[in-house]
Image (cartoon, rainbow, N blue to C red; front, side, top):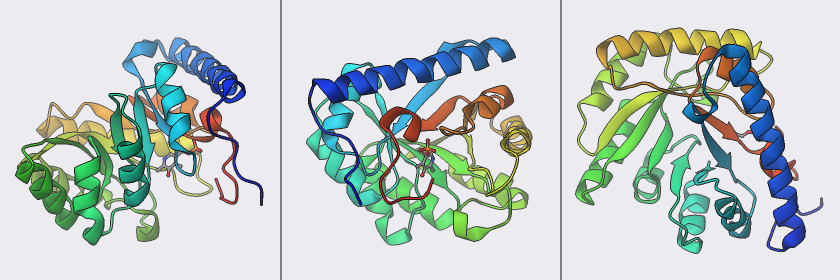
Amino acid sequence: MTAPPGGAGPGRQAQLAEALARLQARIDAACAASGRAADDLTIVAVTKTYPAADIRLLAGLGVLDIGENRAADLAAKRAAVSDPLRWHFVGQIQSRHAPAVAAASDVVHSVDRERIARRLGATAADAGRRLDMFIQISLDGDPARGGVDPASADALAELVAGTDGVRLIGCMAVPPLGADPRTAYQDLASIAARIRRDHPDATAMSAGMSGDLEAAIEAGATHLRVGTALLGRRAGTVG
Ligand SMILES: *Cc1c(COP(=O)(O)O)cnc(C)c1O
């Protein structure tokens, strides 16, 4: 197994700049096709498995939203990078890691149960902070991949909206394995619209990864979570 490319140096900086330009071109084309404005979209660079040096290079290129999926990595990279970035947590959250996730993130995309929402909120409130939260919706009823069942999403949204230390900003999903992302993201969009009826400020939608961001933009995504298309193929991982 080879180490993933990454680290400092002019070669890496040029590689990231090219990848960002290609990504921006895809986003611009998808936005044009849907009549949307590209600046309504936030690119969250998912830097899992890549070093802090890459995050500094991305920051230099104007990518100021960084995502991680493990609490320890999020904390370590946040501590190692002094640029003023917004840190997003996108992975499944175990209850015992909730305080660490709350302490190191500004936005949490993957809140899928009451206990996690309460623990994140309590930690943030104790620190005098407020976390932005997406509730993660399960589109296939497979609890192993995270997400709340759509039938329970409204109750979870209500709980989050009433929890100190957090602000409900919208819904997130990962498309089911093998599913058509277009259908999956349209399903997410209709659940998000339903939740927005009770929570008008929950206008964000976290959807779209390297392979399917066009479908997500078409469905109304506001936050794209992009790893591979920016940083390269992760070594030794699937997806
Ligand atoms: C890794 C990851 C991404 C990025 O996936 P790519 O296909 O590499 O763009 C997005 N969302 C979540 C939850 C992830 O874990």
